[in-house]
Image (cartoon, rainbow, N blue to C red):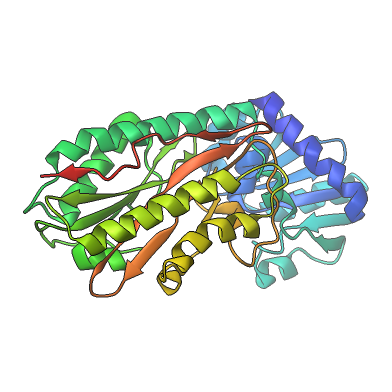
Amino acid sequence: MPADHQQRRQRLAEQFRVLGLDAALVTNLVNVRYLSGFTGSAGALAVLADGSAEIATDSRYAVQVADESPDATAHITRAGRATLIDRLVAAGVTVVGFEDRHLSVAAWRELGERLGWTPLGSTVDHLRMVKDDGELSLLRRACQASDDALAAVLPRIGVGVTEREVARWLDDELRNRAEGPGFDTIVASGVNGAIPHHQPTDRPIADGELITIDFGARVGGYHADMTRTIATGQIGAWQHEIYDLVHAAQEAGIAALGVGEAAREVDASARAVIADAGFGAAFGHGLGHGVGLQIHEAPFLGSTSADKLQPSVPVTVEPGIYLPDRGGVRIEDTVVVHADRVERLTTTTRDLLVVG
């Protein structure tokens, strides 16, 4: 992995000329990990114009940083950012980019006046948008673990089982197959399906209900994200209607994906299916988002997004319909946009599954 981290830092350093920078101070731990491999909970990274890096962390991580970031000069100190600033000044650096989206005003003030500071905005975050082969491999493994976990749990779901039990079973299966859940598992049955981010409760699942299950494994720090809505026994015509609409909307969204496509147009392609059927107001969130070291990252598929799709970019496609006091449906897959195709990483059938 050191070679991959070096290449990522080189890509960042290429932006320095455009931004008028001599170096960058990276303080968001997700971006520190992306650029150096370091996974500790305390640290900062300085990236120089030649792509070299210096990392500061405390004594708890002395062994870990040496193992995870062998190609970065490590400083074991409690001074953290201040140590890196001293190093930058000593190296003759005058203008430094900083992560204004992640650094507090108080912390920025503490950096002092010895250097010129330029906001990086989302520069590093957008570097993470395009995934290398190693990252895509980890995402495939996370998605496979998610599919396998659901397959193991589905036979146990039935009338009388609670939302919390289903969530616990899934989380256990994800821990058996991966690092564990990448985020809080959602299990929303019956009327709770109208709440997109419902937290599982002790509500027993009843006959003739839809159950929305949103979950994903994490492997090597990379997150899978998938949702299936399943049914218990015979469901009504209105439930079949909204399920079929969401299924069709997802297919339309995936068909619209492609290199160079505007994220807002992809969103519009799926949204039109639901809106044209009279349920536009019941689909309030964006169509999807990028996934990687964070469960939600660029690009974002939504009506206000300015993002455009590039090759080797994983995104979710997750339309939904939510009807208060009745229930809802969401179907979600993690897919990868390639130069010549779209690859589905989560493969569990999108046909309506009936259990228990």
